[in-house]
Image (tube, rainbow, N blue to C red):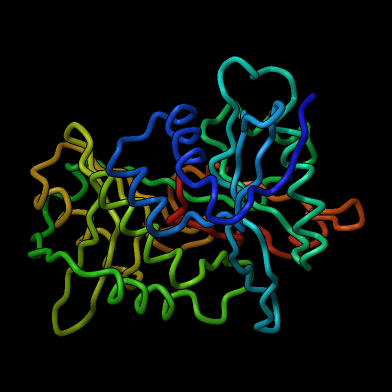
Length: 296
């Protein structure tokens, strides 16, 4: 019989770490960094078969900015997985329901997750999740950018990036905000995955990006720069990486690149109790609900 519970503190970390690696197959360096920086037994939920854990998930604390500069506590559900021999039995679904009840009791009305692949949006929608978070994806061709003089880019630390990010989104409603420790750790984990924090600056403006070079294509997972400077930044990134193509993500309602590009679903939300309607919470958000720098 499968039972659901939170693990005892300090006594199961090595067992949970082994479970995590078996389920997700992440590198030793990524796993060690994750358990050193973010993991905490108090945030973890387990499904047991007898005394053996067979599924896991974490509920990481965060906040959602609301109109009137109010903040709503939310839980970001991450590392949801089941051992191969136990999959297809609804164990992870019931584990999430268990976590919802516990989070609601703690005063957290909303859970948020990012599906690991596009097909899972339908999977979670059938379980009551809605999709308020989108990003706009833009892929300007090198030919469009060819006439722009590239600027030199420099790598910056997480503190500098966080300050720029805070300034860019200050006061905006429906923005997902990590706690400071988790944002630092998320940036560190992005770097372990091959990402860089890059900046360009001159006397007139500054810009920042979290980006990856993947087989000759630059992927910018978050862009912070003044409107009108985004093409110069994109050209500079192509030149920096000697890349052949670039794709940038930004808020769906961003004015960068004249609003061009494709709006794609990014993350989903569900109330942690039946009386909490996620669709109602985001009723006035339009395309403006935004989150990024997620753990994937």
